[in-house]
Image 1 (cartoon, rainbow, N blue to C red):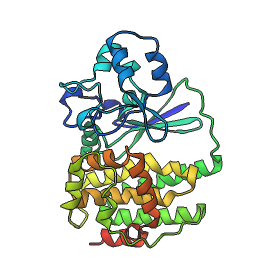
Image 2: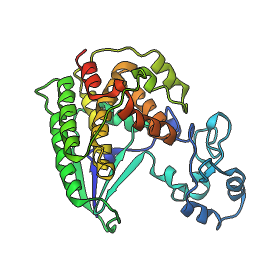
Image 3: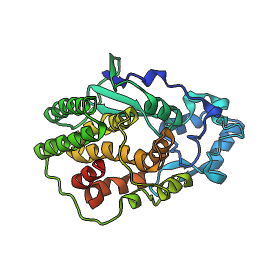
Image 4: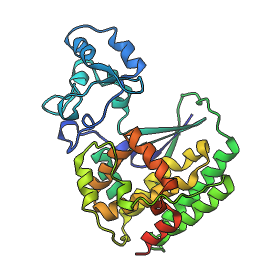
Length: 319
């Protein structure tokens, strides 16, 4: 299998208890089957603690029941993981081992990146002065079985390369690049499948008032947001590039590439309106990308909200 990662991927290091936020607070963690199987082989206090907090969510998934203030029950007063200390990080749940990494598999190619939901990763990506580039290597993993159409995949791969070229064209200001990206996304969408934008009259700011609240600070950012002009800053290119890398090729599964392009533009508007720093996009990511409920709502609004239409987004970019 070919493994493709951004140039900064291997530079990431978790700072554990020194982190300004905690990936062990605010959201539920699934207890995956492999981890549960291992827990059945151990004894002692840590096994008793694990058994005491196992629960089921509304979807029937096995989870760890959260403690006060939505803290993981294994997160100690030093913001370190007691499970990691007791049995090793390799035996913590899959979600914990992987965070803040994400994986997209496309048959013989696996793409891995870092999520903005981690403040350390967010700082790395936000403050980078380089264009997004990638390393590719071959590993011993077998290709993943899938039902994707190979022709569509290769078509979208070339289209994504063009999308990156549009974003990285320093001869044009970032707002003009984003408008060009929207136009290109609409063209690609027309070649793939019909895409009908809706007329839901929800306001742009209300889009980001998620029903599931992970950190109230995000709501404060939205409530105090202001519509402003997009600055011609490298961090805006970095944000848009993140979304193109993470989501663009997933259109091979749903043939909805335009929503993925919209996400790249909206990511820039989020930072422009709610705070021009890495903490803002970190908060958004934690609230949205790591809440299935919030993410499903957001994906729906990308197509149905009039304020997120291509025309509306272009208007925001010309303010």
